Image (cartoon, rainbow, N blue to C red):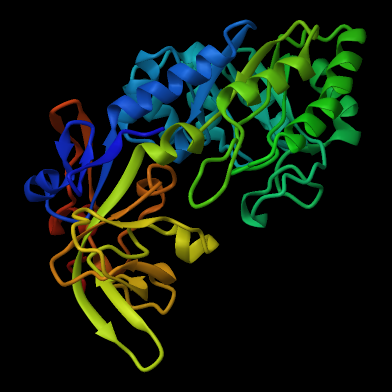
Length: 417
């Protein structure tokens, strides 16, 4: 459930007409519902209330400070994959002991930064990374708490670009090598082994891949415990999908029950890294129709938002709903919804039956709260969109629209030129 709804054919976010936000903010902009964000994190945490757990929101899905603060205020930690995300997590008020650090390419500087902050643990992705963390921790006279990300070779049945748990993925260490790597970690002077990590992919709409992966990881955890490893944490990553079109992913309670049953009696604190499932349907991208064009074989609706604002359709062929802010007109047409970017791959929807938009109409691109603004760019020297949060009747600007000056900030033209 989300808090975007129609009142007499006009789209509202909570108690505010989206049209009113557009009049204040201009277009394009991302619009988030505070009530939806809060409801999702509360439901996720409640689903696991019967077992020790920590929910660490995956910052890469939506790293806006206000969004992070909503989750932190509701007891969540943060899953990070860069020094920049660590900085954001701390700025949002997240306790270091609720931060886990994932990602395959942690630099020496980022490792030092995380050790200085005293985060909960690193999810180690390779043997060389383990050695680097040990060396940086030694130089800093600290102990680095780690889990090893284990690749269980389970097919998550999702898009190959967001499948992370199979043998061919760049992520993690093959489960067959895991015991060797854990024994090596235990022998390092500046490493403290505290858990096991596993993440198999994103936008999963079935429970079976999760259950299959946990079955393999469970055997590893038990083997480690028998060898005397203090595996206090089992990090099961994220990946639970959402409804973009006609998907029917498990709800939080179904997912929780399956995970609790599969991990029963392991004596660990479960860590989760949900991203999309918490923010995806809590946000929309609002844009305005600039022109309509009838080609020889296609119709086009040209908006002021493009692939630089929302990359997912161009990058993955992903589906996002296209709806009218004012749905009082009932005519439809089949068209491509495209942006102003000078690329043939610049589209928000293709061959889609949509409202018969006219120039000036406001359009909502749905399910855009995850991997929307965080993946946006300044391609074609376009300022990035504003981000707006609605809380009840309040319209809160949580990121102002970039200016032309922002586009060249940090650039210089040397005098020799």
